[in-house]
Length: 260
Image: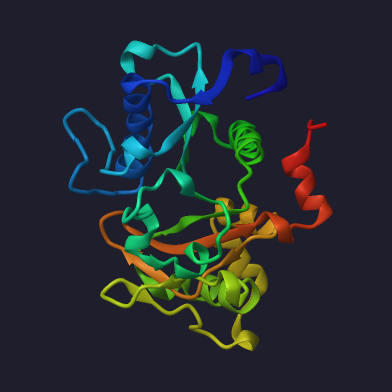
């Protein structure tokens, strides 16, 4: 997306069932067709990637007005957002199936769970993700969010190729104890300290880390202790945590850009 064609795009939260289906269609394209994900509620006939959590999340959409809304192909970027004050007593966050979020839940701070971030292949490498992040910043500021978190994925479930990157994250970007969520014990649990620090090639490890995870690290984010292998989604997940109070002035400027 270039500066001169930005007028063709709209950023807003999903307003109705059609908007949600359009987001689910984009998610199907990215997560199912591209990355090989599956799940009990995926609708292959209608080409919708959906789950039981969709109704309680906000869905931030990047909409290309040149595309046909009747074909559900006008949403070219999406982000799923769940503020903690929306959960009723006894309800859980999506990522609690993989990670123990007790440190965050007990912090008494206002939380925001992020997930299902995706961009249409035609809009990668441009400014689509930048626009989604700017809209996310507005959402965070408007609601007084203090801690952002969510599962972020490496593609694939074979740990060997991922070991240097997982070890690098563990040794260099582990969340402080007060925010250190942990992968749950069980069949999907995967320790991250797979290599000693002196055996990790930093350049190679960073090159293999997905761009979204690197973006959070640049903003001052951390990872939890341990990863989770999600075989349904064909991914290995880490839990990202970002405390807005710990951000440097340079990082915080991202969230206050354009604000009085």
